[in-house]
Length: 396
Image (cartoon, rainbow, N blue to C red; front, side, top):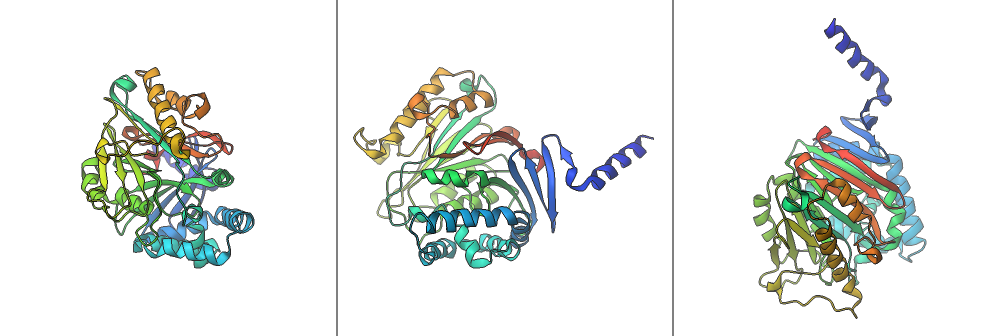
């Protein structure tokens, strides 16, 4: 009788098709072995196969969103309001694409076959975060805070991350999704958080519970002929299972960084910050920085490791916001020491700069809270959707 009940239940799930619900995750659609789910307002993709096959799945499952974002970002914003020409966008986008690993090119090629954009426009969409960053000094953007040990009262490590950008990127914030890749040709299951149709990892977590996120670093020019560090981070998540394995991988970036960056990494026990210079003239252009205080790591957009010999920006410098945001996070960490959990981290990330936090009123595009030990994420895009829990265990 029990077997009959279970069989009937499974048949009911199958028959319901698009109406299958797993707690707060709702099945939406499938294509060629990939699935699309909705976790509240957040789209979660579960993609399977070779990188090319996963690209085809991605393109079909997100067809409407990809085309909508293209028209909003490319036609509406960059050409319509920011005075870019199509040819200039194409030039920058192909510079980005030309240094991609083949496996990530395969995703984009596969996506272009099913999204309806075609390869050229798919490549252009993939570079929407890069257009304003070429041929100009980079702004001070993004912040991260990791707490563990005494700061969480013995609870699991919690990481909070603000992804900041030029204010008009809030127009694209609603398209922020979680894409989980299950490659059969190389690598382990990896979840990346990005806009629909973009294939690289400004933030992500893999099945082994390694989390990472990228902030801009000290002001430097961008180097378009080098591999995009965002795609390098995607490869790292696919290829490495521990923070100790990541250490030599980050050292291999020496003299090969697209732009000055600060990459923060964490697992269930600790966190590190990699300060990466893009100046090839430096003899030592990658430094790994450990905790600011026992159980606490804070990083914004200036190098903190004293061995650089670089003074932080002064108050009369436009870049000084990075110091204020770092100081604010350090202060909040002490105020809430011993009580940090996901809800407390939400409170910290919901605190704006002028109120003693690090969140930019107009420039924080989306925010992430990660608990690597439990393979959990929370995602929020201010002005577009509120905090939503994503249980990656369901997809890893």
